[in-house]
Length: 157
Image (cartoon, rainbow, N blue to C red; front, side):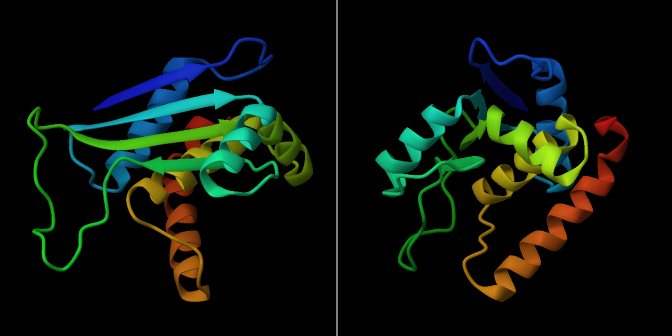
């Protein structure tokens, strides 16, 4: 697995790159994503996330996490998946607003590590095809998030 982490400068108290990689890897293992996968994880400012939200989703508002999948949706006329030439499944990028993470951790009265893990889980599930735009899909995604969170609970202290 290859987890590329980028942490913008000036984000005081952000967990270390190795910890962030470990959480992302554990989510991928819990989802049986395989060992030949790659994704990017970006921890950045609220302003940058808001700009990306506007540029790519047309929403001029802050948010906590964005997921940009590198896997194109496959139509009914195409095979389900073609392995890339390098044999690695490039999932995409998860982008997290660190200031929003801190705010939400305070609101939920738990650690920043727990909150950032929740956002990593959420973002990776989106990269793997989970959605929450309908009540049933939201229920399924939320249940899977809780299962994975309990799986990695020891890392969140």
